[in-house]
Amino acid sequence: MKPWEKNVRKVVPYVPGEQPNQIGMIKLNTNENPYPPAPGVREAIKNLESDRMRLYPDPTADLLVSELADFYHLDKDQIFVGVGSDDVLAMCFLTFFNSQRPIFFPDITYSFYDVWADVFRIPYECQPLDENFAIVKEDYYKPNGGVVFPNPNAPTGIGQNLSDIEDIIRHNQDVVVIVDEAYIDFGGQSALELIDRYENLLVVQTFSKSRSLAGVRIGYAFGNRTLIKYLNDVKYSFNSYTMNYPSLVIGRAALADRAYFEDTKARIIATRERVKGELSELGFTFGDSQSNFLFITHEKVAARELFEALKIKRIYVRYFNKPRIDNYLRVTIGTEEEMDALIAFLRKYLQEKETEASGENA
Ligand code: PMP
Image 1 (cartoon, rainbow, N blue to C red):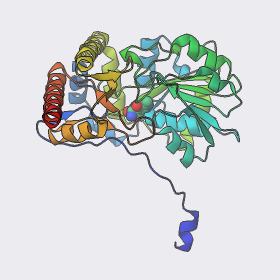
Image 2 (cartoon, protein in one colour):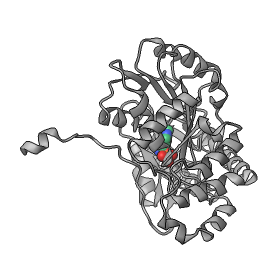
Image 3 (cartoon, protein in one colour):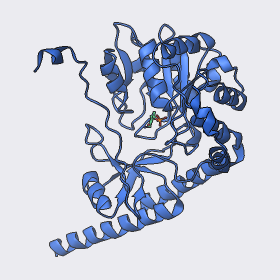
């Protein structure tokens, strides 16, 4: 090691899902929305003023913050925006998790949390999910330096009911509690209504999933004015212009079309419920996902084998080689046609395995 390397901040980075780009591929590996963004987004992009790009964007991101305030019936000073919810969550970790005590999050959860904790030198302790992959709320009643969990959780898709979430917040009023609601629009119960009652609560959401804008990078947090002010102070000590002009305009256009938002959400939920039935018939089991993905396991065939076989057919799903979940696949809900192709492949693959096995036993 070179002398200067001794003082390098070394980290093991988060590894995002693959972004293959193949003709005819079916991409069900990173929980993107299979439908395009609202039609108004296309118009907004056409009307972007290139001369505006000469100027720095509005550091307060007011165009987007005001639209979010209208949509969610909040005041502007209860909202913080960032470059995807990853940026918002990273800012939250940096701002609020600054104690000697460990922060708590589930053992099976969004795999960015331990990376942020490491990079910011925040001690942490994982609390195990129960055998059904549910959060055990009592585990969060011990002294800690802060709490963060997704609802619905990822990669399990399991939602926690609001009264359990409130219990966790109530037991942790001396620290900040972050509820990461990246997937909330697909069926979970949002904790947004609790922000007026708990001044230590932050609710984080994103445009990447339910608004089909993963490529634009917009995320936001809701919380009381004091929390939002602390977050903005750290943001302005880091980078004043996180939200570029096109993303402000695009984000505003996406929010303006409530009917399209409701319609695409409903389509994804309907496809999810349909696919659940078909997967059960094929011998898969899974929890009751309230998100835009299913976390599935098969009684006879290993997840890794299925993952590899699907990949050969250019059907991409996510496999995590991690304790407790290394026999599961996380499958994003795509269009009806994409899910038909997935089911058809799985049916054929499993039938062939069955035939092989009975041949061997004959
Ligand atoms: N939280 C969870 C639980 C997620 O799965 C993701 C998506 N990878 C994010 C946050 C971040 O999403 P984005 O930065 O695209 O808003």
